[in-house]
Image 1: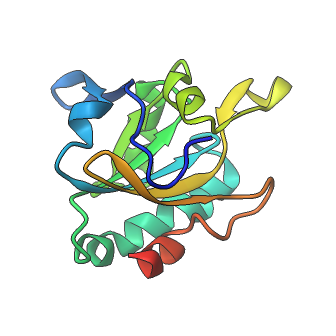
Image 2: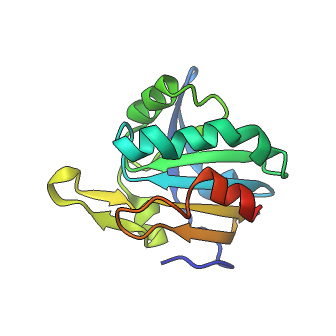
Length: 157
């Protein structure tokens, strides 16, 4: 698993924008920026939709006021699902990115096999990244939601 002080792996994350599909190279995406990235096991799932994403939506201005350039939500879903989920949640301040084949999640070492639920998915986590380097990593224990919340990240900033 990736550790604090390590550089993020090179990967491609997808985003469906009003102008069409955009593929983001992680090297460019995180270069020269301070970013909060959080990952969820699945879009539209209960904890993700009721607590995790909404917390970052509510606290986006406060997080950005701490010098954060971008708040990114990643899930092992496709870009169409991530875009639709962002719209239903009014996540205008959050970049909703898809890791469709889980390659980014696997490169981080943060994948989990959910079997018949959805196969390979991401563990729930949040990290602070500065110029591509992980400076804070909060990974949730299975079936918990505490250390990766927007409130926990705001405190860490």
